[in-house]
Length: 226
Image 1 (cartoon, one colour):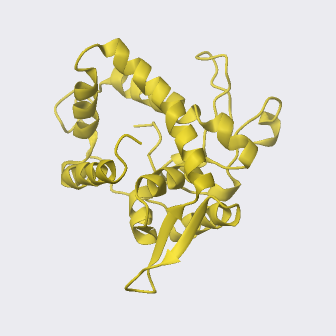
Image 2: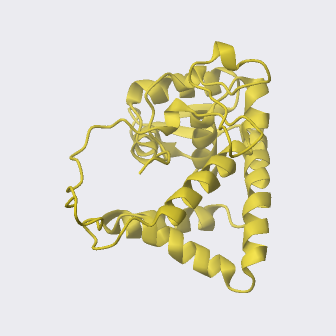
Image 3: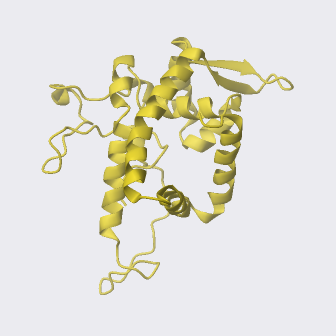
C-alpha cells in the first residue's frame, strides 16, 4: 500500500512547505509526477507513515491472493491514492503563503470542529508525536489562529480553540475541499453521499469504526452544517 497515511509525521510539520514554480531544485522531498499530470504534485513527508509495525503475512509466490483471499485490487488502490492526493492538494494554495503545511490544516480542521478539545485527543487522532504537534501548535498560537486554555476543573488540561482568524481559514479550506467532494457526489447521482459514506466508513478498522463515527456525529451536533 503506497498511498499516504492520514496523520503520520516524520519531520517538522511547522517547516512544511509546498513547491512553487522553480523550487523543486531546492526541495528534495518535492518531485513532479511524470507521465500522469502536467502539474507538479507535492509529496508532503508528514503524509507518509514510517511507524514500525508488523509486516503483513506474505502470500505464496504461486498465489497472488493476499490474506483476504483476493488478488490485489490495483485500480481502487490507485484511485484512492490519486483521489487523496488531489483532495489534500486543493487547500495548498491557501496554506503556502502562510508558511503552513498539511499538519497545520489538520489541527485547524479538528479544533474548529471540536472546540475545547484536549491536546491529548488531538495527538491520538493525528497519530503524530507530541514534539511534532507541539511545533505546529506553537506556530498556530503565535500567529493568532489557535488559543490554548486550562481546563475548568483540571488546570493541567490543555484545551484548544480556534480564534475568529483560525475559524475563517478553516472554513475557507473546508469550502475548497467541499467543491471537489460535492462535484464527485453529484456525478454519483441520488444516494451517492450515502454510498460514499458507507464505503469510507468500511475502510476504517472495525475496532475503531464505531468510535470514529460517534466522534464525527458529536462534531455535527456541536457545529451543524458548518
